[in-house]
Every structure is written in structure tokens, then in C-alpha cells.
Length: 308
Image 1 (tube, rainbow, N blue to C red):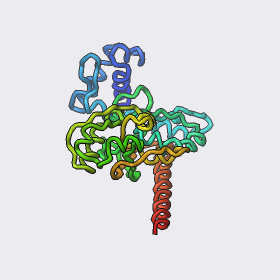
Image 2 (cartoon, one colour; image 1 turned 90 degrees about the vertical axis):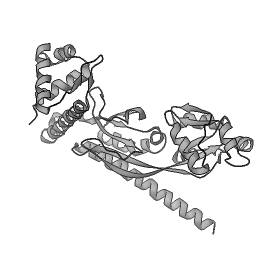
Image 3 (cartoon, rainbow, N blue to C red; image 1 turned 90 degrees about the horizontal axis):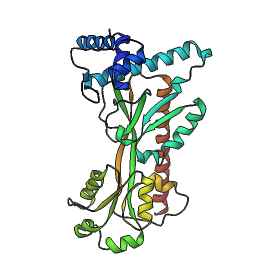
Image 4 (cartoon, rainbow, N blue to C red; image 1 turned 180 degrees about the vertical axis):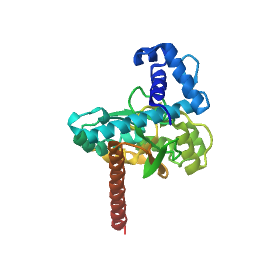
């Protein structure tokens, strides 16, 4: 069985990025910190740290760090259950990894009731953190993350939340100037696309799917779908926008759809061993997505009936 004192030392070294700072944080000598890390490495039979500048945890080190954070959260959850009069609120501070598309459309309405009911302090980490959910996250636990990828990491599981539907849109004038003859290779090679930062491959895959186009295309990148939409509404280009964001706009955007929609799966990744509040958060996300799917189904049915 792993010694919690050794795990705490590893976490301190990783989070403070140094043996000396970890020793100061733990109130022990630097030599004691080194000995504890060596002892833990002997126990697991492999290195846990890359002795570089800055220090980097190995894959095994990241796994043990996440294990330690889960233990601490579960302990807090247990103490809140055993001693509710103590009023411990630390557990109510949770981090979740979010994609920009969800954040711009359905996520906040889903979380607001939970934030109000439980007094949650949520830290939402942007998409670049999602590729490595075990990465160093100061002292706050990453209790779950949204992703289009179903690949799980050690100790986690994922739940399918349905599909995110994207519409490729532009202004009528931009459509007339660039796509009057459709999504032709010459048009796609010249038309200016706008993509979410770090996601040009999504746009490239879309063009290959709807137009069998595999060539290059000029593009600008934006940090959020809202910024992308502003770029498009200004008549500067075209791009993939979550339909939920377009549906949420109070005014008519006056945009036209270019090509077929794109559907991407959405998953909620969370830890198998998780405190009650993290489980409640995941259930709230699943319920919100179910409501949205039902609303979309009823809307699609009504449109089909009206067109008969």
C-alpha cells in the first residue's frame, strides 16, 4: 500500500517545481524530500520525475499525482459527510476542462443552477488542457473534462453526451462572391476560412468530407466561437459555428449555410472514484444534454411536419 506521506511529497515537488521549495512547504529538509522520492520510486519500480529544469513528472509520476488528488478529494467528501457541522467548503472548489464550443453555447445554463445550489467555485480550464488531464493544475483537482475524443486516461471513464452540430456559415454577400458555383476546389483554395484556435484540422476534415477537397486554404484563427462569429458577420470569411450558439442569438444573424452540417461526438470524462459533488456535476451535464437533444428532436419533427 502506498504511503500517503510519500505521495504528498511527490505532489509537493511537482506542484512547487523543486525539491527545495517542496521541503519548505512540507517543513522538512531537502534531503528528506529526496529520500522520500527515491523510496517511492523504489516502491513503484520506475522513475517518477525527470530531473530537468523545470522538473517534469514522468507518466507514472502524473498517474500517482492524480491518484493522490483523488484520495484528498474523497477524504474531504468523507469528512463533510461525517462532520457536516465543520462546514468545510474546500471541496466545493472544482476544476473542469471545457471546450470553447460548449462554453459558448449550452454549458453555462447547465451549470448555473448547480453553482447556486451548492455554492460551487468552478475553475474552467480551456481546451489546451484537455489533451493531458493529468497535467499539473496548481492545487485544484480536475474533476472532469469535456472532449470530442473518447480515449480515456488511467482511472477515468467517459460518458457520451450526444453530438455537437456545427453549421458552416457566411454572409449572403460572401456566399455570392465566393460560393456562387458551390464548394468548388478553386473557391475553397481562395475563400478565407476562420477556425477555432488549434483546430485547422477540423476545418480541413470538413472540406474533405463535404467537397472531397484536400488542398490548402487561407484561414484566420480565433480563440472563441463568438469571435469567429464576429469575423464571419463582418463579411471577412466563413467557418464552422455550433448551431446551439446560432440558435441562442436573440436577433437574426442573416447568415447563410454553406454545405452540409458537421456532427462531432461529445464526451464527459470523469474519475471512477469521485466525490459526490463531482458525480452530481456530471449528472447535471448529462441531463442538460438530454434536454437539448429532446428540444432539437421536437424542433426537427415540427419542421418536417410543417413542410409536408
